[in-house]
Image (cartoon, rainbow, N blue to C red; front, side, top):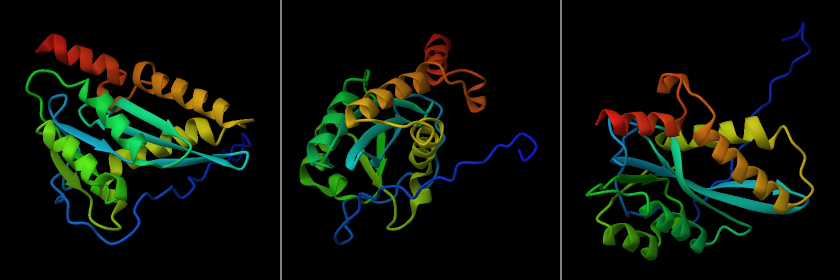
Length: 200
């Protein structure tokens, strides 16, 4: 790296959605077991923050831990509940048959809110939460945020929130459909899911 004049990018400390007292909405069912043999059995979600031109933009995605695919997401200039419930409603549209995934998050106030919990319950989905202060309990989502910021956000300059929003949308499409992963046998998340569907 020195010979080529290359420098690494240090990942900046992420936005943390937790605030207020610790809730008791759900146990840590995932227990850092991020592996699963079939789609829609384990989902993970979180919120991260971006800054541009003195303004902020928040991303709320949900990931299928089967292939690391971002199933749904919402972008908002304020970290409001509607951002998370809107994302969840989109994700429900990806469910097929009798799929009832465990949905894992941190202890952020969004995920302790009665409306969010009700939406999961109405769909028959099981809620799981990281332990307080244990970011590794949601390492899959942390890894995605780190990749997104290292490969896209930190390498570009943005003149507006709208430009950043469009760029994030493009990156997520690239991440799902074009970015290969060695852990998926050199396939993209979408290719891996489609291959599994054919094999089934």
